[in-house]
Length: 152
Image 1 (cartoon, rainbow, N blue to C red):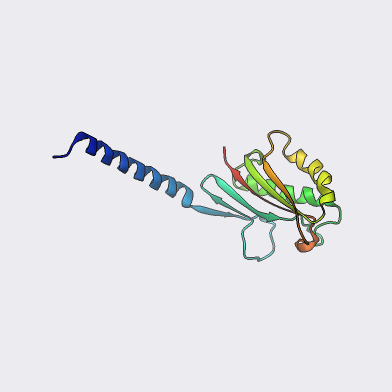
Image 2: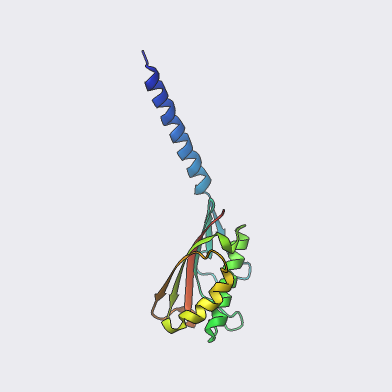
């Protein structure tokens, strides 16, 4: 004969398994996000949306006229962050949904210039962030940014 405690424990276990399965089903669908202006055929997506979380690939501010990053570091920062804004918008999110950012920089003396631009994109409650010195970046970039957004 089953005892009430055993029945309740079994029901609780079933409820937990159902909740985990539902959560997995909600977060396991992947949507690839790429800007319509993207012309390269490189083997990665610019962003991937899984559930309510958006993973943003490393992005360099590329001047469409040259295919390289501009020599002006501030212009490059604007181009990279504008691309992010477009990706985040395409995913149905806002810049305020970005929760963490990592910036790789070839010249740490550009820290203040980058921050001046960055602050205009995150004027209130900025995301967690790391600013890391790096070796050379692709396409003559000064900065490469990557991050994660979670829809509120």
